Length: 340
Image (cartoon, rainbow, N blue to C red):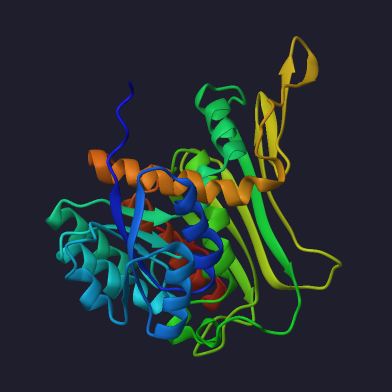
């Protein structure tokens, strides 16, 4: 008989949309995931959510949650400005941490989070669920086996239709959100590309944004060009204000032996003088987004059980924030920024 994995006792910080739509349904499908507490300042909402998922402890402050022995790992689904203080408090209380994207508002906050995890010897994982999509994992394997040769150009973007703002009010304020569309959509797409390419060093960035990101006004559209060590280039474009009939997201890689597209997955190679479609079958299809959360949370629980390094560690989230800050600086100052 195969021994069942031990339960991991999880506390959820935040009972909002991301917890209700993505995290809690995924935990409900994962054997060994024991959600023992949920915390939100809106207690009636937290109680309703707890009732749906049979969560025994409903708490209003994250300090109270940190004191619970029934919680060994914390899943942070809070507004951006609370990510760093909640993660650091959890780590200092000896809890393992999964933090939703964006990991923090700034590299300085991310540095403090990473330092706390190292000091306490706890798992700190960023919630870049794009790394856990089946099609992205298949493409990662193609790249690691050299099937596309040297990738010299990558382009990615996420363009959303213009609509009246209907999200939570904090998302429209820089002091709470940390940034606009670059921090919301851009860091996700940039992380996916950089992960696929094995986290190459970025030498310089050139960017523009509308409106120019300063004071309390958040950018709603942006484009950036990243020059990589070794000569590769990454192009990024994001928008909350696309005047088209539908949203679209893409990620394209071009190598000297082949090319690959994500959304949907397509892989072509040059073989014996001909272009051949070598796209493998994937099962996720339209459910890739939902299933990526389940795969991410399974991986988090396994890291908690074994103490292994996550596929999306805090250190790499910190690296993404440093690159994104160079993008913001370039957009603000209207010049190329070189990274040290």
